[in-house]
Image 1 (cartoon, each protein chain N blue to C red):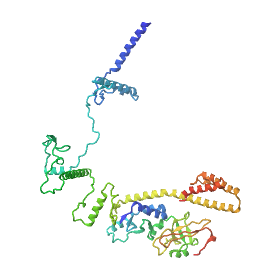
Image 2 (spheres, rainbow over the protein chains, first blue to last red):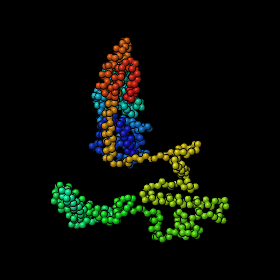
Image 3 (cartoon, each protein chain N blue to C red):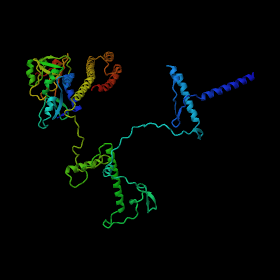
Length: 189
Length: 365
C-alpha cells in the first residue's frame, strides 16, 4: 500500500474530472475528515485517515481492500473507474441523464439507450461528455454485470443528427454512431 | 601705461601665487591620520561647519572633501619617488590598518584515519630532516619525492633472492609494487576527503574475490566490473547467451504511507487548479476545428451542387466571394489571406485548395 505518485494522481484526476469536473476538490478537501487515495495492488482506494491507520496494521499480502475502491490502474497505467466509485461521483456529477422506467431495465442489462428513452438531460452536455445515468427516481444506475462503469457517452441533440446514447457492456470500448438523417436508419433496437 | 600693465601683471602673479599657496595649505585643528599604504586619511575634526549649513550641505561637503584630499596628496608628494618607464612613481609604505577577513573562518575538518589512530595511541610526529645524505650519488637528497635519496626503482643492479623464480623480472616487480602503493595512497586520500565532505563512496563491499562467493554476488561483481570502464560499459562485449541483468535499475522511492496529509492535500488541490486552468483553451480549439469541418462540408456540398447545375466561372465566383467575406469574421485558426486566395479562379482555386489542405492539416488534430 502506498500513496499515488504525481503521474498516477494526474491520470486519475483527469478521469474523474470528466464526470464531476471541479467538484473533485470537494472529494480531495473534505470538511468532515481527512480522506486520501491509496494504491494497493494496482487499485486505488478512497479511505479516511482513521481507517487507513487501522489498515496499516495488516500486512500487504493479507489485505484485500480498504475504504472505497475507486478504480484500478491497468498494466499500461491507464485508470479505469469502477462501479464502487458511483456513490461518491453521483452527488457531484456535473452532467446527468435521467432515463425513463422503460429504458431503465434495458440499460441495466447493458443495452444502448435510445433518445426516446431519455427523460431529462442537463443542459450544455457536449458530445463525448462523461455523464452519470439516473433513473427517474434519482437513483444512480449502473449496468448490471459490468465490471466497470465506463464512459457513458452522450450526444447532444441538434437539428441535423439523430443521436443514440450508448454504453458498453464490454471492456470499456465505447462506440458512438450518429446518423445524418432520420431516413437513413438502418437498424431497429 | 606699460609700467602700469607690468605692475598689474606682477601684482596679479603675486595674487595667483598667494592663492595657490592658500589652496595647497589647509588649516586643520587636529592633524589627519594617514595610512599611505592603503591611501587612507582619517579626519578627526568635529564637523561644525556641516552642522551650521543645514539641509543644503553640498558646498560645505565639497570643500571638506577637497581639503582632505589636498592634505593626502601633500603627504604623497613627500614619499620617496622613483622612475619606472618614463613615469614618476611614489613608493607607498606598508599599510598600517589591518583589514577584516573577507571570507568566514574555515571550520575544522574531520581527522583522517591516521590522525585518529595517532591521537588514540598518543603518537606524536617525529621531527625529521628534509634532506638525507645519499651515498650512491654523493649528495644531499630529499627524504621523499623527486630525486629522492634511496629510490629502489632506480637501482641498476638487483640480486635475485634465493627463493624467487629466476625468470621473474625483479625490476618490473619493484615498479609494480610502487604503483600499487601509489594507488592505495590515492584511494585513502579520496576516502579521507569523502569523509570530510560527508559524501558516500561507491562501496566495493562484495567485490573482492574470496573463492566463497555465491552466484548472486558473482553476478553483481561481474556487472560492476562491466560498468567500470571509461564508457560506462557501452562497448563491452557480452557472451552469446548473456542477458541483461534484472533489477539493475534505480529503485523507485514513494512517499511514506502516513506522510503529511495537509501537504498531500495541498499538492493535489494545486494539481487540480492547474488542470482546471488549462481546460478552456482546449475547448476553443475543438470548437474551431468543429466549425471549420462544418464549413468544409457545406462548401463541398455547395460546390457539388454548382457543378451539377452546370454553371462554371460565374457560379464559382459567387460562393467564393461570399466565403471571402465570411472567413475574416470567424477568426479562429485560418488566416485571412487564405480566403482571399480562394477566389482567384478555377485553376488557382484548386491549387490553393491544396495549400489550404496543407495548412488545414495542422488543425485536423
